[in-house]
Length: 116
Image (tube, rainbow, N blue to C red; front, top):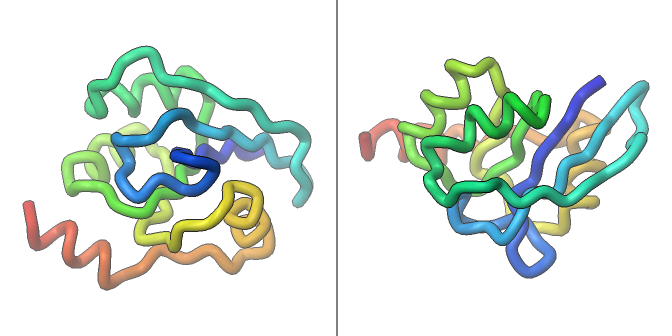
């Protein structure tokens, strides 16, 4: 089973990882969505998000933009990040995830690493 989180602002993937209203978490098993839920993390300190994600049993996060520090923090917790993903609705992004079409944008990842 996978638990995939999408940071959401105004019904779509948040452009900025730390600036979302909430996270929509999809529980996926055997290639289908078993359930979804909306969670608001208790703190606005993005450095605390990896611990919160571990507590939520999140295995993957779909993101548009993050900084290198966030990449490092989530990687240390063995949470997969899909970075540079185009802004779309959470359901469309999860469908791409389940079909194997969701891919991180290497150009964005390289830009993030250069900025640090």
